[in-house]
Length: 438
Image (cartoon, rainbow, N blue to C red; front, side, top):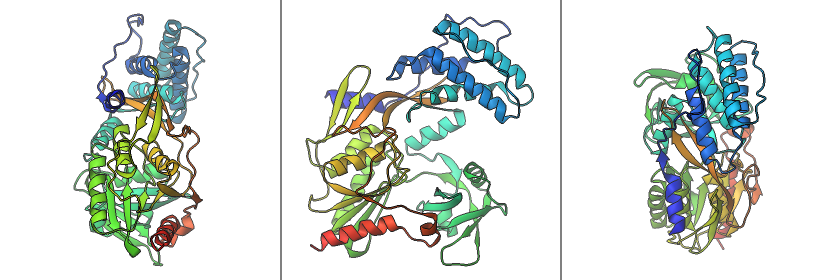
């Protein structure tokens, strides 16, 4: 019961309205840095490592400098020297006022506030403490709830060697209707070349109902292909599944958003009903989600009474134990696919299957981003995740900053993508076909 109650707490999306501490006295001329203090209070009160407020505000000053530099302003903002929280707050306010004055005409105050808050969160250098501005936060929350989270064309992008490939085309999406395909390399948008990934994303997204022209280089074709796609609200699918040759099932899980385990169960039951003899579990580009959903999916694949993780919070430690309820017969072999984009819950699940001998893993080392974050919304519509617990695998491995290594390390290169090949999937199918034929 204790485990489930703690997990329930971790899954809650909190709307925290944190007031500026009464000890902070601002002069009539002080610029509004309120959100920075809200973020500071949330981190100090909740982060598992109980960080030093003065060091956090020093990180916020770095964010001010970086924002000014990006805007073409040479920052003239000294470091913080204070060691106590109250003194550090006073010094930071002075630095923020200086940044506002120096940014006149180049940056709005709100941009400086968000730059400072984001840098303060990043100064902790952990994978699950981060800050999002209101627009980013709205999109994030919608996606975690399984709702349409942006207006675009409905593809998952993969970057290799400075090139931009379509890694997945979402079923029923505008991209699918327009004929875009996996492995297509995007070489232009609306007739213009692409500068970088943010540039590509910004130009592909746009108002609902508008059209965007996508030019791709398709494997096996010499001439580029240009298609017109009508933008629409996009829901990122939780899973896709199908049956490959030799009765090998394929199940891709893109994330552990609300209701993921229910959808995965339905997919596994469908594959089981179709008589699969092996399963490829594709966790590549899976960036995680709710810890509850991860454990519920693990229960679909692992027998009861196995330790999936150990959590260490400010209050102590707790273990996550499987309750069983497996969908596939234990005799059906599993191969999981991972890559550098497999993070958080994605790498926890792959590690659990590997550690307990339920699956072999093919691909590349995972991201090394495994902690537990709690979500906080703030008064201005922004939000953040704060690391409230450290987590290890069932057998005690620390994946944060380390990642998990596959049993069979196989890279996916730009050359592979250019010829429309997926050697990681091919190796998984080969392993399963051999196991199924025994």
